Length: 98
Image (cartoon, rainbow, N blue to C red):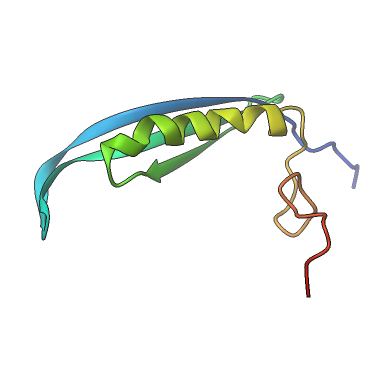
């Protein structure tokens, strides 16, 4: 079986959206009538696109959460997609205190 190189991350597309709920959800603090979401597309160099959704609970967290995720692009752009148990840019390389 020939070895093929893993796709590399090309870019992130991040959007903050407020999706109206057809049936508002009643909570102790009031009715929740919309779902504040941060949508992310991870575009690879071979055209494969991955998607994620982050629920922020409050619309006040939409912009900072979207900006945080967008800022990850500089860390992951050009990185190969690797299995979960492989080392990654997010792994801690510093020794842990005992």
